[in-house]
Structures are given as structure tokens and as C-alpha cells.
Amino acid sequence: MLVVVPLSAAAAPYAAMVMDARTGNVLHARNADTRLHPASLTKMMTLYIAFEAIQRGEISLDTKVRISKNAAAEPPSKLGLKEGQQIKLRFLIRAAAVKSANDAATAIGEAIEGSEAKFARRMNRTAKALGMTRTTFKNANGLTESGHLSTARDMTILGRHVLYDYPQYYNLFSRRSTYAGLREVSNTNRRLLDSYQGADGIKTGYTRAAGFNLVASAERGNERVIATVFGGRSSASRNAKVAELLDLGFRRSPSKAPVRKPSAPIYAETRPDKPAPGTAGKTIRLVTAVKKSLRPQLRPGAEPTPAQQPVLVAGLKDDIKDALAEANASPVAKATPEPTPQQTAPAKSPRARPGDLVLASAPATVTTPDPVVQEIVTRVSTSGGRHWGINVGRYRSRYEAERVLLKTALNEMETLDGTLRRVVKTSKGFDANFMGLNRDSAELACRRLQARNVTCFMLGPS
Image (cartoon, rainbow, N blue to C red; front, side, top):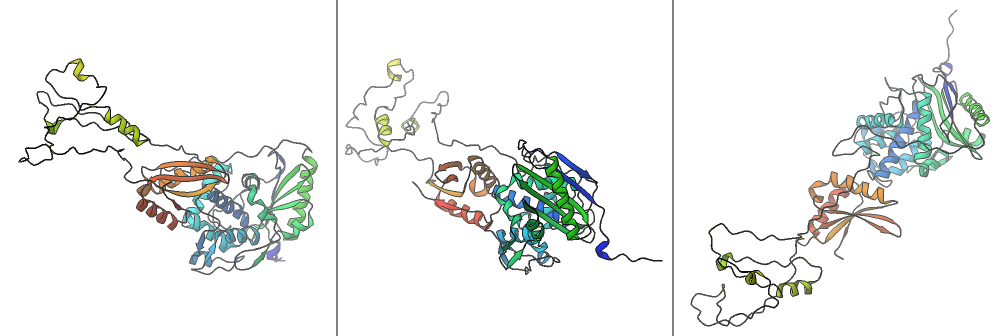
């Protein structure tokens, strides 16, 4: 007799893992390294990279993302985005985290890397850096695709990184509902959040090929446990299994344990024009002011003429009066065939100009001495009016500001080449500035940066 199994009962193979989130110790595992379809658990990686890109200054929460035809055509679950529509990144993140919207996840990937294929490659680089050794991503949303596979262990590792690497965003996963730009959306995990004490996230997933998946985290007192289930037969049975695994985790985890946060990802692949996420660069400051002007030597056998007389250039000083005093105290030396020590030694005071001296600029017919013309010596400017600057954001730490300066300089070498990168500490944070521009180049740099959705405003001469 042929028995037809309903689609709802045809679940994927079961796999599970329970981890003490504080230490990373595995408390329970079953088929934890079996490669299965992760479904929308994939969006944890999409959101992790979005948080990373925001922190690195690649994009901001208020960046308006234009929705592509590809993103708008994604099947449900979706927010309902339309091709050509513009929406802020913060709303796409809310929709992907809470509603598990496929169109929002695809739009996030395209906004950060330009295409979903490039974003998938970044997802795989990030997975490798996080230690997810048996995961391969093909898209940003988790819809079933050949080769798009992960494991219960890898998804548990990812959930722990989301929790500890970006705690400022973790509250998204516990919101029962949120406004996502177009409408209010409800959390796909709200039943577990409401029924299990201490549950505060993280992400659900479902496709026919995957079954009902869930990575959940809960905190009770000083203890925090993460449980992952692949291949549930229904959302209700999956939630019951996750609750059972969380209970097991709280029983097995010690009441007191040190919190050992996971290490930051180490990226093996780097490109000169685009340092890999998470890599720190050195800020190189160039000193371009002239320190010393060397006097050229005469050609052997040549006699100096008035046109060849060496010109003394006053050294660059911070005070014009100092430059004047130094110029007045330094006479023009006479060139003689064999200079004596007395002639080469600097004079203590300048000698008066002879009354019958004819200036080089005077006409040849002039036979009477010209009136004495007062000469004014000023500081020589080497900046060419480059007293302007630009600001590319304010950051929580000097390290973040210097990292953004380096990235911006590499991406905008055409207008920022030769500028001085400067981090200025203020009461509200650390300002990332480029100095040493003229007004036109500062305006051009800001226009080019703003066209790439980089915050920029000009700094006038102080």
C-alpha cells in the first residue's frame, strides 16, 4: 500500500547543538557537523556583515537604498518592496531581523557590495574568518539554492558572534514588532520569546528543503545559553525542542563562569584598494613643509654675476617678525676668487647700501641713484592656499576614526592625495578630518564622497 506523506511532515534531517554562550563550551550536539539547508538562519550572516559595514563607515543606517528588480522579485516572506523604490538601510535591517523578509535581505547585500553574487563571496570570507568551516553561502536570504549549506555548529558559532560582536544591535531580535519603513511587522520568533523565560532572540528559518530551523538564545541570571535546531517538523514542535535544549543547557552550564567573548574575525584575503573587513591599517602622516633650502653650487670655473648671486630665503617660521629679524641679520655675501674667513663669517649687523648703487630693475639710461625702496620680507607660503579641510564623521574611538580615514583616502586618492589625516578628540567623540586642501578641492572631495553616501562637510580656515 502506497502511503503519501504530507509536505508538512517531510522535514529535513534533524541536527542540534547547545552551547554555553559565555565560554563557547559545547553542552550538547547531535549531527552538529552535518551540512544542511540553513534557510533564513542565513540572514544572521547578512545582518552581521551589515553591522560590520556600518561600523567601518562603508554605509550608514540612514543611507537610502534603491531597490533593484532582483530584490523586489524575491518570494515571501517579504516586506513588499517595489523596483526603484528608495528606503533607509535601518528599515531593511529591521525587516530582515524581525520579519525575515527576503527582499530586504537581498537589498542589504546589493547595497553593501553592489550585487548579491559579490555579497555572497563576502559572506563566505566572513564565515571562514569566524571559524564556520562547513558553511557555503550562495545568497543573502537563505532561499534554497544548490550548494547553499551550513551546519548546526556553524550557525551556533555565528549566533554567538552576533550576540557579542555587535551587542548594540542585538535588541532587534527580541522585538515582538517594529516599524520597517512601509508598515509594522511582527517577529517570526514571538511565540518562543513570549513562552520561554529569558529568551531574547535570535533567528528562525523555514523552507521545504530545510524544515523548521531556529537559533535561540536565553539568559537567566549570570548564565546564557544558545541552542540551535535544524529540521523541525513544525514551528510548534521546533519551539518545544528548542525549549527542551535550552533547559538542558541551563542544567549543564555552571552558575558562575568567566565571559570569554569570541575573537574578532581575522580575514585572510586583502586587497590594496579595499582592506578586508576587520583589518586595521596604519595612519601615515606626511610632513610636506620645506625645512631647509640648499644653495646650489656654482659651476667650476664660473664667476658669479649679479644675476647669479645666491638668494637667501628666510626659513619658514611661525612668526613673521622672526623671519624679518633673521632676514635683516643675514647679509648677502660677496663672491670673491678666494674668500677669507672674515668674508665668509656672518656679519653682526647689515651694512648700509651704497648711495650710488644702481638697482638691477632700473633702466640703463638712469645715471642718478634711485630713492631707497623699502623691502618687506614675509613668510614664504608652501601651501598654495591649502587651509581648508573636510570632516568624514565622528566616531567612538580613535581607532575607528583612523580606520575610516585610511579607507576613505584609499578610495578617494584622486582628490585626497597629499592631504594630512588628522583625528581630533572632542567631548562627543573623535572627529576624522582631512586637512591641507584648498576650497575647490575640498568641495570636490565632499561632492564625490557624498555621491557614495559618505558623510562629509567642509572645514574652513581657522
